[in-house]
Length: 480
Ligand code: NDP
Image (cartoon, rainbow, N blue to C red; front, side, top):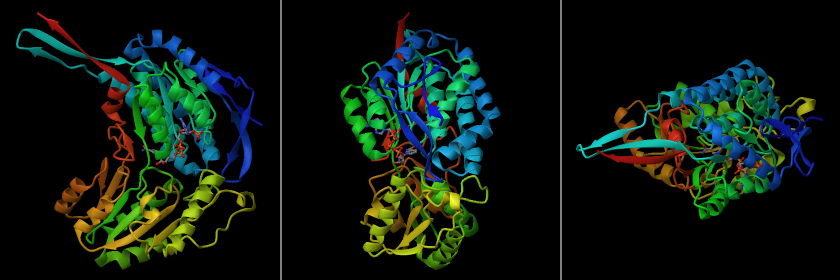
């Protein structure tokens, strides 16, 4: 059985303790590979390699660094199908989705930041002929990059690309539930000529590998994407050490649909914003508010379309949804649905039988589920489930929709559907979130940063915000 090792100093190495964890195929429930069950000692080795490499990588001319990042992008593009298949097998997302969304975005992450760093210009200002001020964005050192399992390569490379582009080196930790494509990146780095030690990947569990990165005194910056509870633990530990931190956390995003919405496009997009990647996207619009006048029409069509969603083998391009990522995740989602029923929630879709091929019977499949008739304070309206489950409710007035949408401790994103410009602007401005899409959901623009708010995190990722985050900004004042 394949053993996924660590990638340290340009080489694939076994964990020092020689131990491995089972890695499951979510579509079959069977172990299909193993990953290194690394510990602090492996993180220390990765850190030493990254620390040594920083000396020359941080001084490597920007053009040379950009060329290597562009080569990395070209190699992933050449191996795109292979990467997509690996990602799909590893975490259960449909192959079409990995191929059409995750891989192109991972490629773009390297191209975007390679080009951006070449164009990046420092600012300077003259102080009334007395002095000149100029700023420098300097690399910080060894960065700790921790990514989740839902968009494994997409999110890991969204951290690696800017961090390396500005001259940092990195110790990365993929989720133990999705180790494969990050491991394949090691091969790509070597082929592209990335010097050994510049980017290291340590596989294993969050509470061992992740924690060792977070608490390592030589790593001054932590970029974390994941759950809010984990984020809080990391903040407590790394905050005490005055580390620079980026926290992209959970979402419980509102999708507000006004009576004048263009319904065809809205329903088609709402299916994606509700159930893409089995609802395991931080930006999913899991709370849907529909204006009273069109509530029945919208629900009839949305419920029917949801019931028609094909769920099954992620390799079959006819299936819109594969499984959720793990047995634990499936149990968590089913428990949330059961609780909603106990609280009087009405299941409008989700209870249809799942007809799965023999090979997928033990996979972690959940039907897309719509729940109505729950009170605003119920857990399902308030807590992130991170599965294919949405709650719906009608609203009469705009101010009610805004009030209910803002009644959450999360603040990642929202969608608003209306043809009225005034409504679009006024609602977008009132929503307490980092990103608002009007008549759209999750446009893939690298300059956009989703950002956080409240329980959704701290800081911003994307575009020049990433350049700022991964650098230390220094001001130099020269007197004439
Ligand atoms: P987790 O918080 O469980 O894990 C995220 C990463 O942190 C994993 O690599 C995990 O490793 C690691 N980790 C776990 N415990 C620790 C620890 N104590 N110290 C350091 N690292 C640790 O999140 P999930 O992987 O379950 O991802 C889902 C969550 O991510 C959702 O809440 C989702 O909303 C959020 N997310 C946010 C995004 C955003 O941009 N705001 C984008 C995508 C997802 P391991 O898995 O091995 O335990």
